[in-house]
Length: 436
Image (tube, rainbow, N blue to C red):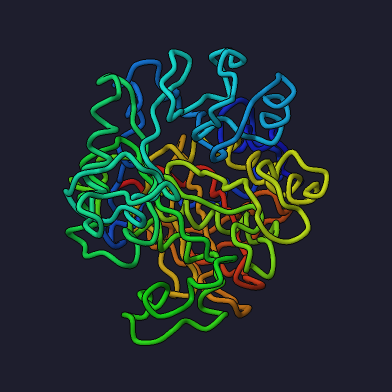
């Protein structure tokens, strides 16, 4: 069956009933728990579903809201907002100084802003100070990149001071957000990076543009994935699974573990003049799902392109990017439709497979939703095992692909065509058999 928004909602038991064919397959599921299955644990999304409720004028905490934003956009008309909303954007992650926040109506899109406003839903601190100001407590001169020395004395590091000062200027009840870069992910010690991640903001992200950055595969950067021993090959580097690695890196620094949401950046155009190609639709989709599989609680698109034939600060609004807009809109609609499941607990330890695929299992309304993405560039066939379902079989619905897979004794197989392959599976009614 073709999975539409209505059909998907029905399958997730959100609004409707099952189709007859799926119901017949579901009836084959075991009704007896496999008590010999390996231990499984439920894990809440980072910060908990109600995390945003603690802030003034907050982002929604409803299960149906999963943040999907664009970075540093401008809004000058209702048409700008309409176009972005139609593409599935539900939050502006900072806005240009000339943007008119009065155009926002308090509904989607929401807005985080580095310029204080009564109309925003959170404050944005400095972007990437781990790179241009560095990990240190020296005096911040007040200069931004390109304005002269950032720290006093010149040559010292003042990134902690900078973020501390900016955070102190935010109303204490307002949510604070900050994004970091290669300092946190590659260059700094865990102790140095952890101060950036933990001390200044309530929601955090880091941007590594694995598909388009001309330098990220080299020593001192992406080489960290192989313990710094060598540069990454193109196949190892230009891989959607690495967006999940970046999320893992940031989440590993959060203390206490899982105590605040981590968002993920994905580029839409060519963020660098030296980029030879823009990210493609399949790459963007795979990067988004890799991020979510690894625990990202929000997606932020870098919507600026400084190379190639479609240079813009508003990629999603440009005629030259119509295909990217269509591809991004499609994945955003999937994220929105699946938001109640994405905000539901993880069921860790429920699924087993080889290392060449990354996955996450969600348990929602009595069903299992399995998110799986390739972690290698080459094509592969993967065996999935769910020991908690080993005493039965049934059908696994592959969402958005108009197909089902037969599951026998808790196992099923599927193919992943390349490094951008992502499959989203639904096993209806399996939740009670797999809960701890």
